Image (cartoon, rainbow over all chains, first blue to last red; front, side):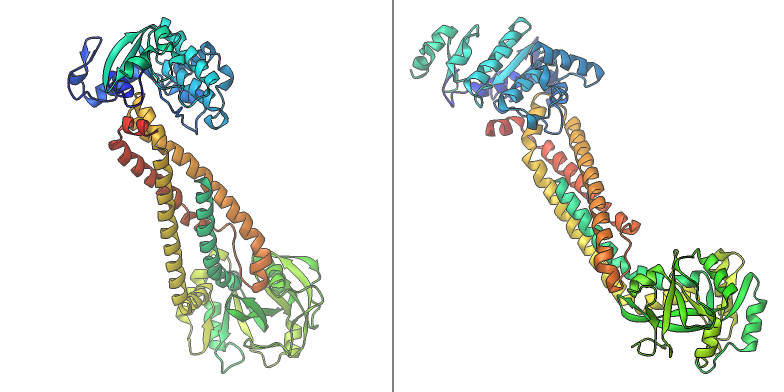
Length: 198
Length: 359
């Protein structure tokens, strides 16, 4: 976490392969990003990573279920079964046949979380997933993401310390650089803000 | 988007149908010549000469040669009032032609021999806004190539595909002695009429008689309206081009607005080819629905307008004009093409992060 412009989102994009680093390199399970072409990076994201963005973008002409199926490694009949399980696991089964236009902002973001989990990714990257939601819906989304900790890593970018109560570690960013690792309690107590303000 | 397609289809189909109504009027007015071909004497004589009649009788494939009288009545068309022929035939000849034309009397009765009475097809009745008992033609008629010295009353209405009118031969003989008579030729097989008429046209002396075959009549009128047909074609082409390009540009704007959706899908790892395919299928479904709705709107509107606007003004219109429907096919195709081109171009330069960060 960190203030606006501290480089939180940029770090997330670099880690997830959405942006190429200007210097240095990253690797995932032994594979260096710098040795992968765009197609291979896309494939890496599809198979190993899940994404939740600030805006809950969904295809308006598809149902929630079909939108979630888009996150499957291969879109076939088994993907529907998988998506169905995902809706059940997240307790949003009643949303599965609704169109995005029929959903509230919070509901849309929960569908996006389901989509991010569809491919059982090793890492879920969430870029300010609660920024466009009210506190209640924000907590719901964070709770859903936290449940995934058992299966994989969840990287959340936020500037709202209240959303990090279930985090294991918090990396504080400032001026494009990681500054310090703090506990969620320290983050909630405002240490990060103090640190980031120098 | 769908509304734009509906309106575009409606606009093009309506313009083409209305433009085509001119030709439909021409072909409908002369539709009776697809049942029988009149062979008329040139202006100096009152009947077909013997030598010409002998040539006609020798022509193979002919079923009947009827000696017919006639009078003319005015009908309303898009070109103004034009004369329409009312055949004066004997009862058996009239029944034979009605059978050939697929017409049947649906209201009123048949004309009584010798009386100034006539039966008309329902299309003619609607065109002249008549009801049974009204005067079909009379000495006070204005315009037309020949009137009728005695008022002729409508006594029956026929229904069927053709525009045709009959009075009794004995009435014509008694009341219209100065009116020329002519030959009305039918073929054993109705499908042979065009070929037989063409053969007669080639064999007969045009200084003595004229063969009013369907082909000749329609061609003559189309030739005389050639400039108008050219203008109509240009109008069609311009409307289609402008509407198609505008629809395509709207499609471009529509997909540009939705680029963020595609950026997110690209970010989560969907290949660009998959995204393009999704855009194409979405556009195809949308345009197909818009096109069908547009056709339904066009058919409904033109059907309503046929009875209220066109027919009272003597304009024939086919609300279900297949040609007009074909003219609208480029709309969904061009919109889909624009959508694919837009998406493909944007996808080739897509930076998902730039779009996601823009939020």
